[in-house]
Length: 179
Image 1 (cartoon, rainbow, N blue to C red):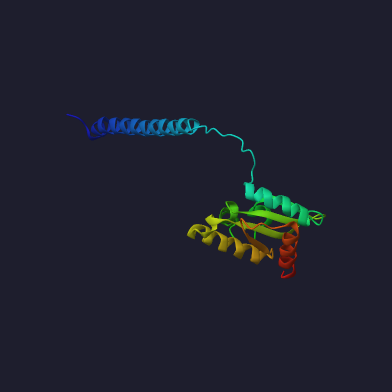
Image 2: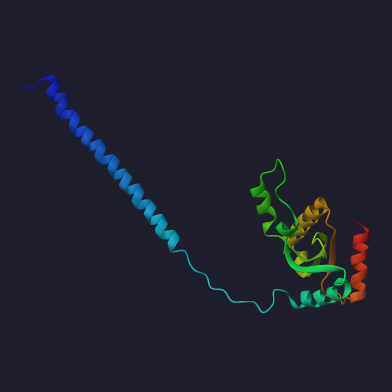
């Protein structure tokens, strides 16, 4: 009949061919899968947007105007300032990516800066009813902690108070005196 080497040859080559076809098939499946993922990424929805009439609420705009009259001659005033703009998250020995993520979605309503250096002098938050929600209380507490850690005083003003420029000037100066 067949010799041992002939039998091995008859069994060996079909197994090798089968394994090669299986490997090629696996590669083809992986490539098809990846091209499908690329296709899915290209088909992400394109959201539509519209421009806001103002990036401040009416209450913020009223306060901003009074704040400008009160301290505009002494400080530069910026509105809707995100914490990463005034707080450095790249601290030696700390993983900066999660530190950045922690502050990235947080902002303060107004920031007063030195006119010459634009260094942050004071942060101001107008507190409306939303600041009473548990999630906002937690967020506000964390923003206060962060600003205190970096030495930026925070002035919290209850929204809806009818403050004259003189009253605002007094609150600003009082907050800065406590620094």
